[in-house]
Image 1 (spheres, rainbow, N blue to C red):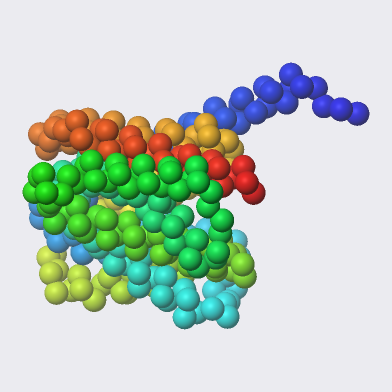
Image 2: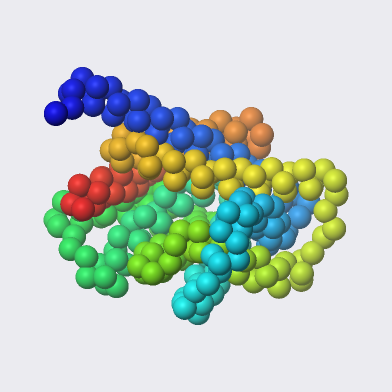
Amino acid sequence: MSSDPQNSAASLRNNNLTGIFWMILYTLSMCGMHASVRHVSESLHPFEIAFFRLVFGLLAILPFFFRHGYGILRTSRLPMHILRGVINAGCMMGFFYALSIGPLARVTALGFTATLFAIVLAVFFFGEKVGLKRWTAIFIGFAGTLVIVRPGLAHVGIESIVTLGAAFGWAVCMIIIKELGKTESAATTTAYMSITMAPIILIPALFVWTVPTLHDYLWLIAIGISGSLGQFAMANALKFGEAPVVLPIEFSRLIWISIIAYFAFGEVPDIYIWIGGGMIVAATTYTTVRESKRK
């Protein structure tokens, strides 16, 4: 018995609406976290903030342990989990540092390049085929980076360099996660991410440690919750909605963070950030959609 096309269309529409909701929640959560990092960095070092982000974010994985027990820690690939944790820890510290010193909209826009780096790395590590159209999209995306940074025409701030470095590191982590996914469950990969990163970041954080106030702790808790909520929302957005529908909504992060930056910190993003950010998001969306269709 064939399914009713109208019911199928309605179901797809409802799923996409659900995916859009989760994607909007993701963008708001991440923007809230980034702005909170900037605010609390006035009294705490970004490395310390990153440590507490992981400590309070660990609460999000406790249900994994309640449901699966310590069995989720069984692995035969511990060195790769640790390598991922080391690289990811460096990325988080770098990105939080960039948020503490640079314009929020600029850092957010440049952070979009992680997906482009990951696609290029996948060609070399996994031998994935990339056609002319996807290479063109990747070129446009990196051209968007040049529009934002404008080397030779404007001062290239340290925040831009650090953000691009963190984005490249995240891309390496994506490759490692893809490799781990061949043998490890998502619960195991998530658990080891938090467990390995917290002690790694604690070491440099101790050298710049400041005892947080009660006010600081409230913001640190908010950072941990919003970061974990954002990851959960992104997973659900891609679970329910179609990639071509939900992924372009990520560009709204530039809108939300620009509004927050203006009212909270008096920052006004220039036209180059909007143009370059749009080019990067369009390129990442196109390449991701092409990849999902190919598979």
